Amino acid sequence: MTENEVRQQLVDAMRTLDARGLNRGTSGNLSARFGSGMFVTPSGVAPDRLTPELMVFVDEDGSVATGAARPSSEWQMHMGIYRRRADAMAVVHCHARHSTILACAHREIPPLHYMVAVGGGASVPVAPYATFGSEDLAEGVVRTLDGRRACLMANHGLIALGPNLAVAMAIAEEIEEQAAVYCGTLAIGGPKLLDEAEMDRILRAFEGYGQPRAGS
Ligand SMILES: [Zn+2]
Image (cartoon, rainbow, N blue to C red; front, side, top):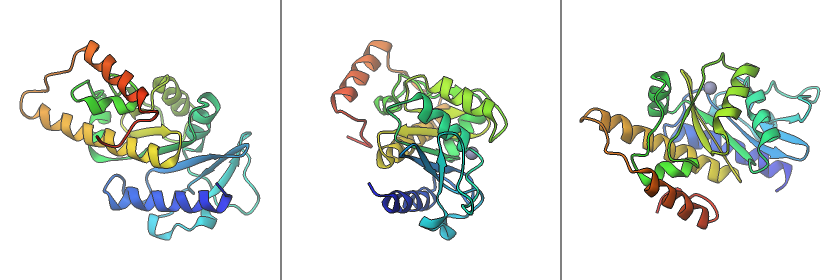
């Protein structure tokens, strides 16, 4: 993929998050691995004002070209994932409502539906709270992901990664759906959970697909 295609993909994806109600305003940020670093969305620009030129290349050492826009305040979290996860080619972070509700209650998404497994585990855990944009947050998220493709971030939101931006987006959207379903079940007495053996079967079946799917 060319540099211009990556820049345009990030713009389109940011608008998609907004249009689908998965994020609002200038919160949330996206990135895609590129060359020796990544392209990341800029800090504080509303989706309708984003342009491909505003996407920021951050090199592996954290350096940004002179004259480039200021990268998202969460750029260290994105870079931390690329450093530690060879399978991560794109990262989606958003403040989707139901994921954020659970994150604010420090409540992980349990194995209540087989699609929870698109996150790469039997549950979707919550990374410990740390101030937005901090190295501590980046470290906590990377540690919590621990081989998974998604986690919640305490008192903050949701993060997902994938082998490309489309898959990372689909995972984020599905995890938000599972968060909404879980919130719904809590209002009617709580979910009946799938057992560990069944979740193991589902996780193995998802591996067989080659990549998790948005729905099946
Ligand atoms: Zn955020």
